Image 1 (cartoon, one colour):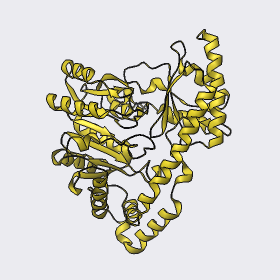
Image 2 (cartoon, one colour):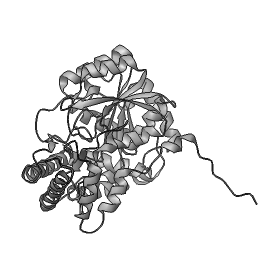
Image 3 (cartoon, one colour):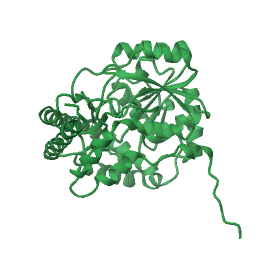
Image 4 (tube, one colour):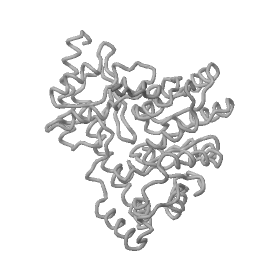
Length: 401
């Protein structure tokens, strides 16, 4: 008998296990303080309120909440969210809004309708690891543009677009993952102008925009563009719970139709019961009451982490103080490798993410991302103190003092 041999598609060659997920397995060991994953604080999850919403969905909506639904999503929830988003400055009609299974599926749907093998994508350097992993399945090439504390420099974007035929621009402009920075208003306008000059769509990923605890709110690219030429993505994972797997996509009709076709082929629709439950949760006013609680909790933890960093990290380590979101981005002295620091830190029961995984074309070996939302006040103090001691030891070892 001939031995069965599996011949996989070429795209699988670029598929890899999520590095962050692998780190989370290590970090789940008892006693490990993890600053690795982008996990919301579980104690902020609205258990009682969502339980009430689930009961309402089953009692009021009955069998409809357990039946198949349309791909486009629960009409009442879409109507509510369009009104709610409008208050945040986001112009959208129900026909221009689609639900996805979290932002990750949104990324996959966007990649599916836009990318052919070999197409180029312009991304920030660094950029969101989950986007790189998703896009890799479609075999693109990356054009990377470095960011500073105000985002990508317009002259760098223009130079990159002039030299490369880019299929779309992917950005996380507000509380960027991993760097935590926000693109300035001037650069947002410049990016939209550059994209229009070159006839290129922008994919705006905005999971953290509403989690601001310092500074002045900035309009989204979607808002500035009037909904034209920008596909906007957000998620309830950071606003309510990641377990419900409910993301949103906003796009003009031509793009939305293609996204609907792609979703129909992928999974038909989002979970019906969850959509009905989230509808009741929102209609009850629980979302508006919940957001300030999350923001207050994250503001406190970010402050605790930054205070601990100032006390325990060597002055040669540069960290970006966040105005919102979930992360602190740190740059180690050039001689240090975050991967080496990680190996020593995990022995001290502290985990973080090596920043190099966020660079689509390589680099960033001396960077690291720290999450402050999924740790207690005490564990932040303890974990940063341990990490600071490891960094000092590594600096002495490589002669970086």
